[in-house]
Image (cartoon, rainbow, N blue to C red; front, side):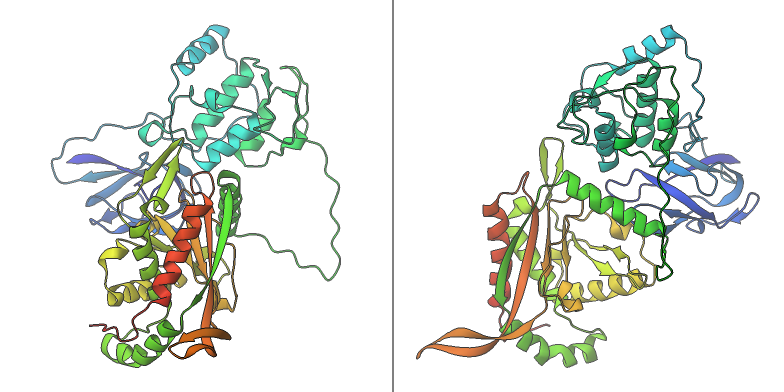
Amino acid sequence: MAIIEMVMPKMGESVMEGTIIRWLKNVGDVIKVDESILEVATDKVDTEIPSTHAGTITKIIAKEGDIVQIGHTIAIISTNVDEPVKPTVFSEPEINKPIVVETPIIQQEDIQQKFTQLLTSPVVGRFYSPLVLNMAKQEGIPLQELELIPGTGLDGRLTKSDMLHYIRIRSNNNMVVQTPVSLVDEVVSTTTIIDDTYLANLETNKPEINEIITPVTSNDTYIEPVKPAISFGGETEIIEMDRMRKMIAQRMLESQQISAHVTSFVEADVTNLVYWRNKVKHEFMNKEGDALTLTPLFIEAIARAIKDYPLINATVEGDKIIVKKYINIGLAVALPTGNLIVPVIKNVDQLSIVGITKKVNDLAKRARENKITADELADGTYTMSNVGSFGNVMGTPIIVQPQIAIMAFGTVQKKPAVVETQYGDAIGIRHMMFLSHSYDHRVVDGALGGMFVRKVADYLEGFDINRKIW
């Protein structure tokens, strides 16, 4: 008999932790390989996690509601196969252990020893998640200080727990930090000491920078200001955000804070595209059993343009631009709940129009049924949104981090337009559409951002009306 430690699996790029929603199996239950044993929620999707081994669950370590980092043990499985015992990867199974408000008793020599461990040579160019950057901004921790904090995450990255631990040591050691204006615009030349009550609030994502009392002494108790009561009239409906909406709100705000958003617009004549699709859609449905929409054609055009401008297919990590050689395009899908999800079509440039269509229809259908897996939301390199499906003319989409660009396609409208003919210019009725390209101006200048959206429009306008599908 062997004892196997089941760990929280990796569930996509930039996903560093997951929340245990519900255990589907109990201690003592016999399980099979790949049998779903629990449900986990990340900032991208809710998904079922399959068992990595067949056997019996002997212990459940991570409880429902716990936030567990990738790679940490969540359960113990005993098997009938003689396998070597897997060593424990992490020493602290209680990943989401709450922070106690009382100030712990820490000897001065212990503090100095911890700071000796913290203040090592800087780790330059390390990737920092939006959450870590937000916490650093709120605490006035500059990049030079971040680079000195050891990380326990994947590839030495800083996690939320690392930051909370460091902030606690920082405050217990009576460190007074001058908050740089460049990091916290709301506070100008203030001196801040953070106490344990503030840290407890930080653990639940409740701190507000304007509510920090300064200056205080290390023995003072932080008292959160009493906020005035909010009065609602009889015609008001109060709707509590669900978990996914809270995550979407947080990710959108973080994206705006991280990327310097700029949007370029192009109007394209997609008449040939519309005529071709209308001509073949019935045959396509009869032969493939799938509806042919304009979305797969938009995705195909994006993939072709990425090959012309590969620098748009990248992410930013610190001061490095990571250009991806594969083309994985995310498709924004509106859910019946009103929330948004972005499944990813992998290696789009290697698929035919039939393959792209089937992928689009399958992912969109399963996304609305909440049957998308975490892997199908991971590793996107570029994202598109078809806002025209809602009758919108154009939009200014927000970049999906850590990507650097996203494109929105507006509704197709019939408009009078100048048409060049062999007899001269004439006014004709054309199918016109706006393309909106939002990109990160930190690394994408107007030339690249503008040329890319123009190239996508060129591919759509130059669509061959006699193109064969099969």
